[in-house]
Each structure stands twice: as structure tokens, then as C-alpha cells.
Amino acid sequence: MAITPQDNSAFMREVDEEVRRDQTADFWQRWGLWIAGVVLLGLAAFGGWLYWSNSQRAAAETQVEELSSILESLDEGNFAGADDRLVPLTESGSPGVRAAALLARADLALRQGENEAAVNHFAAVVADEALPEPYRNLALVRQTATEFSRLEPQAVIDRLAPLAQPGTPWFGSAGELTAIALMQQDKNDEAGALWAQIAGDETVPETLRTRAVQMAGVLGVDAVPDEPVDMDQEQPAAAAPVASDAAAAETETTQ
Image (tube, rainbow, N blue to C red; front, side):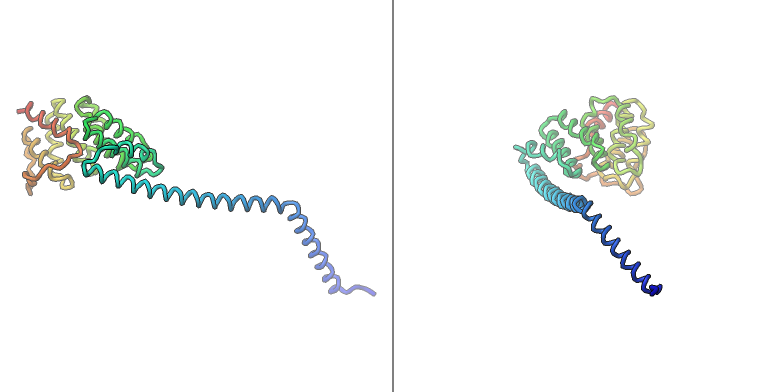
């Protein structure tokens, strides 16, 4: 008796399913352990990453708390042991913590009269390309101000050229140092024009604008703005204290 097409089709489906079951069983017999190993390895790696991430986060939080404690002590005038506590933080994996610790070490060195150490700490921030640019620019201005007296005027001008431009966040401080360097080169016309720009820039702190008005006046440039700045305002802790001293010296020599 002949097999109908329907019966033949059912038979072929059964054979096909059996073959696939055999292939699946053979595949898992051959590769099952390898696949399981890869999965377990992936899970272990993911678990390790989670542990590392949590550890890093916890370490960063601890470092921030330690940094805050140190800075609070420094504000209160307690310098003892501060530098030793800051050293480990300068090697932090957190760019913000690392930069803040280096800048704090530099400020501490300045307070203790250790200018060379301060310059080195500022330079370390400038050289660390992993740090955010605002930290590095701040350090560059502070470094230049700290070692201003031993730098050639042109070195100051070249170093600060990108920052001593109107519209940049550091125009006031970098422009002031640059103007003094120009005066040291007897380029009083250029210096006077720069002082006038600083005096007229409303984004620059008023104390710095006040100095700029005075210095421009010494050079014969009328830089008094339409709305005069407060000439009696107290001088803050300037970002470039060395520049103020240099400005005073230049005033005496030009009078």
C-alpha cells in the first residue's frame, strides 16, 4: 500500500526534529562547558567591575571629606601636618581631588614662605593634561605670579598670551601680569592700552579694575569708565599678589 504525501510529510518532520535534537545535544556536549565558562567569566568580570566602581566611589567620597577637613584646618590657621595629609590626595584617581590637593599644597607653601615649592606644585597642575582646563589655567596664572620677579618679561607675555585676551575668564589677572611685563620692556603705549581694556571690562573684579585705572593714568591713558569703580574697596587676596608689588615698583619708576 502506498504512503500518502501527508504521511510522508509528517515522517520528514519527525526526522528533521530528531536530527535537530541530535545536533543540539552534540553542540552542548562539545561546547557547553566552554559557553558556561565564558558566561561565568563574564558574570565574574561584571561583578568585579561593580565592586571596583563602588570601591572607587567610596574612596573618592572619603578623599573629598579628607580634603574638606584639611582646607577647613588651613582656613583656621592650623598648618601642622597639613602637607603630609595632602600628599596622598595629590595621587588621587579623581582629577578634581588631585588638582585641589596640589593647589592647596601650593597655597600652603606660599603661606609658609616656600615659594619654590609652591611654583613646583603649580607647575605639576599645569603639566597634568588629565586635569580640567580651568584648574590648569588657574595654576598657570598663580605660577607666573609667584615666580614673576625672576622671569624675563617676554617669557611672561608669551606664557600668558592665550589667557590675557578680553573675554577669557583669566583676562584680569593674566592681563595685569602682561601689562606689567610690557612696562618692564618700556612698551608703555601697549601697556596703557591693556590697562585701559582691563579697567573697562565689567567681568573683571572691581579691585583689579581700580588698579588698572590707576596704572593707566600713570601712563597717561584715561581709563576711567563711565560708571567709576569703587576706589575705596578693600583689596582681596589677589590671584597675583606678586603682580601688585611689581605694579607699584613700575609706578615709581615711571613717575
